[in-house]
Amino acid sequence: MRVLFVDDEPRVLEAIQRMLSDAAGAWEVITATSGEQALALLEDSRIDVIVTDIRMPGMDGATLLNKVHERWPSITRIVLSGHTDQEHAMRAMGSAHQFLSKPCNPKRLTDVVENAFYLSALTPNARVRELAAAVHRLPAMPKVHERILALIDGSRASVRDAADLVAQDPGLCAKILRIVNSAFFARGQLVRDVRTATARVGLDLLRALVLQERASCGLSGARVEQIQRDSLDAAAVTIRIVAPEHQRTAFTAALLCDVGTLVLEQGAPDEIAAVRAYATEGLVPIHVAEKELLGSSHADVGGYVLGLWGVPPVIVDAVLGHHDLGRDPSHLSAAVHVAHCIVAGDVVSPEAARRAGVESRLADIREAYLEEKHAA
Image (cartoon, rainbow, N blue to C red; front, side):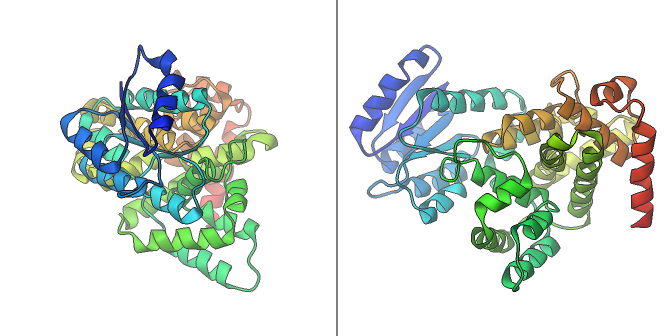
């Protein structure tokens, strides 16, 4: 495990090395005092994680991370900075996976770095891991974005109405969760649901984020819209399964479960087309075909991306486990699994129904979903 720390203050680097002395057996810590020196080290050495300050003379941290993103996309990119304004933070968000603030608790820093290594093990295929780590935005829903902008620019805009629209776009939802759980916005407690995240961001920043997404060139079309509609349907079904106090988190987890599919459709269209053909010909589930051909399923890829972005672990675990109940035995993962089965028209196993607590309600939940789809 090789970690490169970049800061223009040698005393900060010395403090980091002392702080991480307990991890010395597992990590090789390398330091650089400028962006230029960091790039030179990257040219000559294999680096797994880069952790950089933002405000540095010469090449700043955001510029450095942009170059790393372009040339070594599989490297996990983390900002560790203090006194950073919103403009610098948003610039860094474009190429950084996570944003930590100085002074940083040693355990928090080691947990973030070690989690990056755990997540990379989920995607043994180097190409899949590289395209997943390179992702900094997901395919958008232009019609939803137009409605959000119209709402915010109108005279009766409310956070509740804005959150309802954000919840219709898994990509925008993931981005907002990523931002509010970064050190720049976080207030001590992880945010797990769309409404709280939207309120934390505020309407002005939400407008800027939507405009930023509209300006980007991303995947779009009927296939993406279908994936996102199915995700929204599964999120709505999940609410019928869990207790009221868990509904917001469950909705968000179900909404984000197919993030990995969006990543694969965007970054590896030929490979995912071959996967779909293989699944159809072999009559096997799509996640099984992905495992056999790519070495990782869309659940693995989605969990990897969301984990790198600092999305709360309860949601990441639900995404990772929504096709494999043995991976995450929680009620939330089971509920999300059942909801996705209902939307896909798949059989729900007795074990999945038991774990989700819907043995006696499964037929009613499925019937209610089908009636709503027919009415729509």
